Image: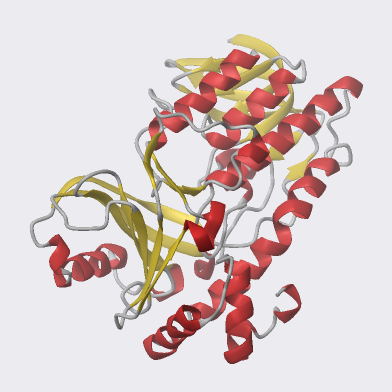
Length: 396
């Protein structure tokens, strides 16, 4: 069996994996980045919406190739019809882009390669290699060939279904209430605002929301997430989305060009995202915004943090769980409180009826909120509907 050696092997060339590879390589490490598919970024498994606020933080410059649409704002609607429109004057950098996600992912992988990382396509990790109880690399199948990749550290960037973490003995199990079932259509010939993202909250999408993300004239990603514990049939997400589309006259002539389905974790991250000689990043570490299901910015941040910490560990040769704690501190200091707060808010919102949600949107609409963020929305809600934030008031 062919054996390859390197400093770090990174499993998964999504945003988290590519960012980890880039910063490891910039730090002088010999890095191999694995991608099991034939194309980075495809097939699509993303709604493709991101805010702008975090791009500078991780050193990503917007490129015309992957910015499909620059949004002016967002529209939040209740199932009962009350809507609130906000634009950049109120939302600032929280207003964002709709991506061509497959091109975005390829751009990040290109940056990793430019930094010195080696990319191996059609290479799937098939197991962890341990010697004397210590992780020393992975087994993989590359273009049909069984290989071993020996490395000082393994980075699990293999997404929601992360097998690498489980093989390494890390518990990534989720409660049904911390899973959203999602489906999305790319639709054409529809009559939606071309520069406003739309979110619909309430019984039309139990425990989640419906989104409409424009991708050009009369084209948009139209999708739904439904809380796992509220799914009672075999295809609840599709049933709810089809019903909502059928009842909205804007979609009467719409046609579906693409269908994407999957699951999203909505928990506030794992208790530990590291162990001896292994680091979990992005979706593999369950580091996703529980209230929105958005994970691209979290993936990029955690990938960057991991790459920087691993570069320092490489100088001493120590990749123990203790030596990897600076990674835990970086992502938790930056994101953990917000993730926990949004997880609590998600849990509460799943219990609210349409009338209460409608009243919440009316409240937000009439409140003098200068900068519309989840935090500031919760502050306004706390004053009139304290029961919604019961249990996490200290985070608001």
